[in-house]
Amino acid sequence: MAEPLNLVFIKLGGSLITDKSVEATARMDVIHRLAEEVHRALDRRPDVSLVLGHGSGSFGHMVARRYQVQRGCTDWNGYALTSAAATRLNRVVTDAFLGAGVPVVSIQPSASARCRAGQLIELAIHPIQQLLRHSLVPLVYGDVALDEEWGSTILSTEAVFVYLARVLHPRRILLLGELEGVYTVDPRQDPQAHLIPVISASHSEDVEELLGGSHAVDVTGGMRSKVHLMIDLVRELPQMQVQLLSGLRAGLVERVLTDPGLSPGTLITV
Image (cartoon, rainbow, N blue to C red; front, top):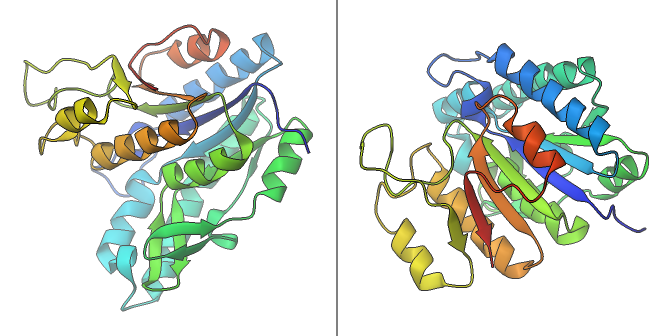
């Protein structure tokens, strides 16, 4: 089956759509605004197909940390509770996007994911392909997963995107967070921080210099590993670009979706 020619993946970061300092607290104003922006963009660009994803934020992460689900459960109730927390946030996001007119269909990653030592090795793709074929918007999210070596693990939205990208070949991946992109140091702690507009995946020595410091880009709990994951993916799929940008700037998502020539934030390319 032919894949959509103009396919874009969008991730709504957990720190963007939840208050990570208060357990199970969604930022409803941000979620609804983003849903409206995506709806307007799809109205203006009906040729664009989307796969949406979102992080778990203060819903799943706090429960997962409490029970140490990341590398195997000593109390398997923690697995169930983490799954339920992630699903609750997904319901909130699903309802908001449907209410805005975006035809999202929730896909629970843990229902088909198989992991080994924290790495995703199998995920059902056929349902996502069929949804795209019918002009629907698959919505995945950060979730728990069973692991052949550890028993359990956490499956990030980025890991799901990487797995799907190898089959679906999106043109772009947009990772939306609180910050404008990737910075030299944490801009919330150092006024000398400056935005890195472009990261070249083909110049590994430059990349390692940028990401080498303990605070270089690790400013949202997982930025450093996220950037490394996307760099590796761009090296593997050089026709694709990744953008990290702020989801707090009103109207930015709509503009970027409708005009692929815009490159705010940080662009990861070959």
